[in-house]
Length: 363
Image (cartoon, rainbow, N blue to C red):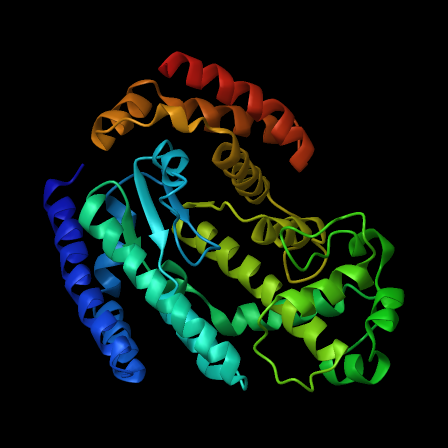
């Protein structure tokens, strides 16, 4: 490991800690635009350094980034499975992206809701930088390295490809569909089952019922007069954009995405399955492997015993490294991918037994 670069990485995190503390104070004083502007400038100025850290601090795909979440929960020890993987672990900082989303909303209720989330994100990030130095780094990977224009175009094509009819654009979509019932009837049968609105929804319910529950239980970034077609477009397009964003950053930076949330996984799976649109032209081995690794991380996150916790996190991480826990897990995923295993059920069946075997070795 390049000790000079490691020192630079740690120094960057120390400087970001100070910046976050200042940002929190500004947000509490209702100076959100100044606070977020300062954060944005900080990361734009340090983009090249982050790129250098990613390229040279550890080898490709020995890096993981925790993404698809707004905060990392510590009360239920959900950081423990993340610490078991790779040599470089990054929390994908979405403070800037979430603020951008909040400012684009026409709903004051949604903006107030997002402000509370931003404060919680900042507090969690301060906790990580103070207590997990060198174990978890915080970089806004998708903010810095996303290709937003390309992603928006591809997400539009993916969304329109969900329908049986050849729909050319969003204007035509609005003309053809108004209610959730008409939308449900227009979807391709083989793809409709992958469409989800909430992680905890009952998959046995109809799409219409799940959609109505989604509207009732979520704070949406739309006005009260928004129709079903607008809400459906906003939600599914948003999930596609998030999936494309995560997947493209993983490929370009050669870093594995780690998520506890099933929604990004669901839409990345749909993205890879529906390979004839969006310019993918058939999923490659590395794309299938990334998806399988993501499902593996999801299984690991929910199955790894929290009893492995050691008061000294450095010792615990050292045990994971000494046992080659991450390498053995990834080797198994690569084997499954090469043999054509490409489904969440297959991955869970094989990986859960391996996780049990590896954690028994650590006990």
